[in-house]
Length: 95
Length: 419
Image (cartoon, rainbow over all chains, first blue to last red; front, top):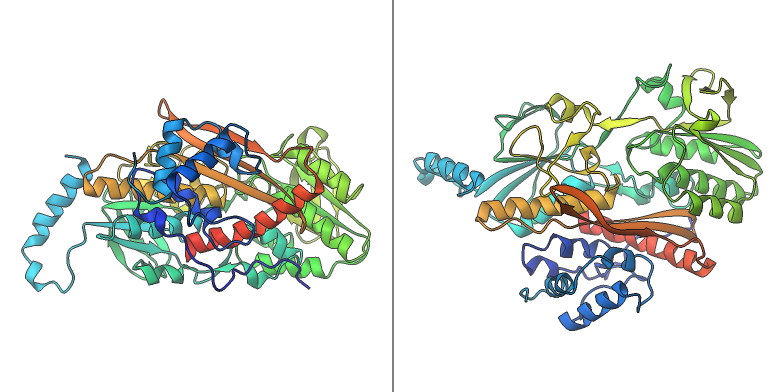
């Protein structure tokens, strides 16, 4: 009897905002691979504003926010890169 | 003016005369993508969204295939084989022209593609994402027929249900042999995740048993984490034999189900899963896109082939070290290439080349470890900007949390890639 369930919830909402962003941000397009909004345990990115996203990313980078996958992915980003990434993910023009 | 724009303007001038006779507008560019796995499908999807005026044709002969990720869960009954079936069909919903056919030839200079069904496709840009093929020339006696008796289940084909059935039929006390190849190969932690989940299945069935991992190398990704997990979950059940201890498989006898190791030892297991060494799929080699090592060298900034202009190679076939050959890497590379092509068509500066990877390995359905990294370009080289893996000191609660992340990651990357 299979014990793992890997079927997506039928009501999941796809994260589409990344596609309206600056086409220069290839990194932003990788976020929905995990944070696409269909997962129960991994938060989607809907509803974040630019500042909240940037704050969270900086906290992961600086070790102030514990995490599993995220700290290792953002450790090398500068404040300016985080600001551009957050803007791209939130679907607004890059500052 | 960049080269693609110049070429496209020339093509548009050439196409101007018959324009009133055409039912469809002339596309801004014709992109042909070869291969509908995580790289090709991700590139097609991203390109449709980033540059809707570009015609995107994706050639993939398989209507359905098993995904590499979660194959080990499927062959050990942790999920059903039907749970890991994917198809390029969903890409048609967003305007990708899926050609269900097999590519038989690529002219890398003219950028023309020939298919088994007799199609001749002209591309302005080619994206080649054909995956890997097995090498039969490194282990004596190993060929496709012998491989069928010792299934690798590494290519998303009929060997997946075959190995699943063989696992389900194993008796109490069975010995399983896994052969892991030399680097580089698709899914570096895969052989060790396989050993873990095979041990889990034996344990869950209340079976005694032994799993021997014969390796063509002396180290592997996340080794300390795997071995700690094996000691914790399956003490004494999994034995890893590195190359230095003679563990490399040098010959097989498919008929007898026998492996011969470099140290001269002959091993007959109840079940062998021999994962051969790999190289870029044959079509990449035939198209003159590979180097002496059998992989496709690419420019880091946009994965353009270093051997032929106007062709991008992504996914497992590309020589993209230090990125591992993973589904996430291929997905990330596909998106970067889509943005690069879109930027070129629209005359914008190229995208900032940042790439990501995250891979989860299940040691049991409630115990996972992960590795991940951020990659960028420095001095024209693809480099690791930051990376890391699960800490050795993590609690069981964290391993269980990562197992839930692994499940959700699998659902989400499939949705992100295939729709």
